[in-house]
Image (cartoon, rainbow over all chains, first blue to last red; front, top):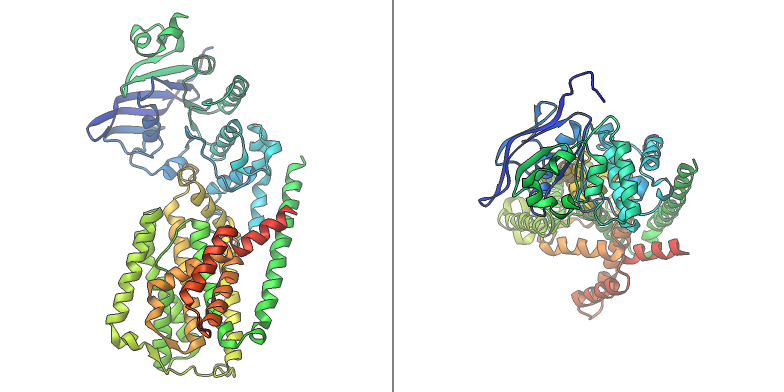
Amino acid sequence: MTIATTRTTALQTVKLVKEFHGFRATNDVTLDIMEGEIHAIIGPNGAGKTTLFNLLSGFLKPTSGEVRLFGERIETLQPFQIVRRGLSRSFQISSVFPTMTVRENVLVALQSPSGLPFQFWTPLHKLEALGPQADAILADVGLADSYSRLAADLSHGEKRQLEIGISLTQNPKVLLLDEPTSGMGSEGIARVIELVRQVARGRTVVLVEHNMSVVSELTDRITVLQYGAVIASGKYDDVRRDPQVIEAYLGDEAHA
Amino acid sequence: MTAPTDALSQSRAARHNRAAWLVGLGLLLLILPRLIYPVLALDVLAWGLFAVAFDLLFGFAGLLSFGHAAFWGTSAYVTGYLLGHGQSVPVAMLAGTLSAGLLAVPIAFLSVRSAGIYFSMITLAFGQMLSFLALQWTDFTGGENGLQGFARPNFMGLDFSNATVRYYFCLALFGVGFYIAYRAIRSPFGETLKAVRDNEQRAQSIGYNPNRFKFTAFVISATLAGLAGSMNVFGHGVVSLDAVNWKTSGEVVMMTLLGGTTTLFGPVVGAGIVSLLQDRVTSSNLPTGIVTGLVFVLVVLFFRRGVVGTLQHWMRRK
């Protein structure tokens, strides 16, 4: 497939460093993630994948270096400001609003960009205007039939689906997914792969993932982290042949 | 798609449930001065609104304030002081209420940055500061003697020397305060507050600034606590150091838990139970603290959701 126009960089880091008490969890990471690609960040446990995600989404501030979203520097912004600029994330541990129903979870997220949240003179049923949008998102993530259940009562897999749904409410240009298949069976994984493919249309998706079959099936390019530093980056098939990567991480799977 | 209609009918059932509680409680409050003596009924109103205000912050924003007496008490002193200096009842009460809201601005600003026990400790510290200030600043507060003997000049033909008249005047104010709390909870603002309470990290990652919502909830809560404090002064005609004492902060926590947090009506019921109980026990030979404490322990043990919370739970299961 040839792409006629030059693709722009959606998300970029320049010499990104995060130190915790002298320990470098993120070590000089320079990354370019192109608009429209699905990019996986992989690496052994403790390689700094989640730290990197927290830096990209504003939950951590870097010790030094830059994060750019479509060219604009965002590393000093608060998470909610970064969301408003078009980058939304999910969490490694399912992160929903447990005391609300599935539908309310999506509604409360949908009202965020609408300017409604500070209106306490607006009756709650006015939110119903966002209902069709909420139902569409629930249908997209496969939760249309669970709309009235409490989020706390969902299964692990359903919570992950809801999480992605909540992230989608922000209509992000860049979506960060932290281990979307963790703790799932093969059926759930197949479902998530389909879901990620679907939400990636017209979006840039960055995911942290341990499951190599998911990575090979979904991604355009991958980046391998070890000890907080990038040791390889490129197409999956190229990276898996990189001796340093085989040594560090892929090991058995690359030989298999 | 069938989903939306179903969701709507479900919330309609919930709305009917709320309406039933509202009508029941409203009727009870209307006839309350016939059931118990009017000054005690005034207590129920003032403490009831105080508890509703407290639960707006505790139940819906997840912030346990241990210093809410600061707002109740500040308003009480301002109201009493102004009444003692010839101001009319509405002016004094309004000024008291606003002073509580104003005081809340810096306290909320500093405290909502912390969560959990740290938030509680910071609010307790501010509460204690204010309590010492009230003890020392005798020109304004009367120190140990408090403020008393001030006039409650009649207003628009209302005879405020009559406790029943005072009760119905306060009932109207209670209605206003309760409605404001209701609106704050049953609105997009309230939904966002719950989202922040449930999962602050997630709320941030859908574009919400949690501190802004907590701050706003705090100031509304404190202002309503101020309105309640001014009602109490207006009702009794005295202000004592108790108004800013930490025990007052603790009492409102107890009332709210007793009635049922996040139930909207629960805090009012809790305030009613505690007020009546204290009244009965005080006129007997039993030790007040031990009896109310015992009731509190029993309710917490056997009705974890509080009185109203447990009733609602039973009704929903049926």
